Amino acid sequence: MNKAVFEALGDDIYCIDALYMAPDIACCYLVVSGYECALIETGTANSVENILATLKALSIDEAQLRYVIPTHVHLDHAGGAGALLQHFPDVELLIHPKGAAHMIDPTRLIASSQKVYGDELFAKLYGDVLPLDANRVRVLDDGETILLGKRRLRVQHTRGHADHHFCLFDEQSRGWFSGDMFGVSYARQRYAQGSYVMPATTPTQFDPALYQDSVTALCEVKPRLFYLTHYGALVFEEAQRERLLRQLDRYALLGREFTGDLKSLEASVLDATRAELAKLIPESQAEAEAAALGVDATLNAQGIAWWGNKLSLRRTA
Image 1 (cartoon, one colour):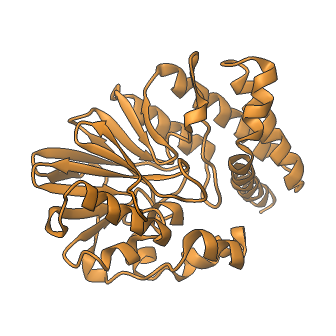
Image 2: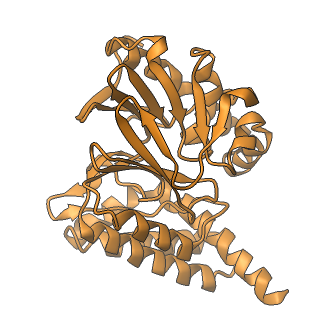
């Protein structure tokens, strides 16, 4: 790589492109406080080269990186941890208590992702997912505070996307590093009338009610920003919260009505996306913009189907 791909966001925070699937799809965040810094999210093994190039471009040496902190253990957020920590022998990985075992032994994570993507695409997207030494992994409790230089990052456990998910509130920027909990919003979804935010409901632990509770809790502190993993800094507007909650209501209805036809469910998710986009942009444009979110809609439908099937099993038990 000839040139690092990153963006300075202010408040000593840098957005580093994880180069996952394509540019501007997933990112990691470098947070700096004095001499110390932390990396929030790792991307995949394929992301490591750009992370190292960015640290070099910012003249940050090995000793300055103190923590690596994935918000959860889905592989586009944490899959590169093992490969990255090989370059930083003294760095500690901080993780949700329910995610630690998967970082130490990623066998089940790998198998689960291979079921979703297939072996060939998995290898292309994620590369080698390496295990971590248990002595380098520390779990973070709900409400715990991480001190980084003079900076304080508060941990909040958030369910609904995954049971092993937390978000980090940065007091300095008044911003949440929200992982997938405040949904996805790519550059093209930031419209003059407001930003479109789409829930992230990938399998296998989606729960719409818990997701709504988490979104509401994140917004209660009146944040200034959300640092989305997919993608970049989003200036918070109250309308975004309402938009997410409406879509989650719709997803819950789709899950309750799910009969096993995944293709039909994907189409319904795209219909819900199109309807929400039409509140921000002309109807004619909304169709094309919804189609551009087809991959996300497919993954969301899989998560809704998983939740719907779980409900059906409970009803028949």
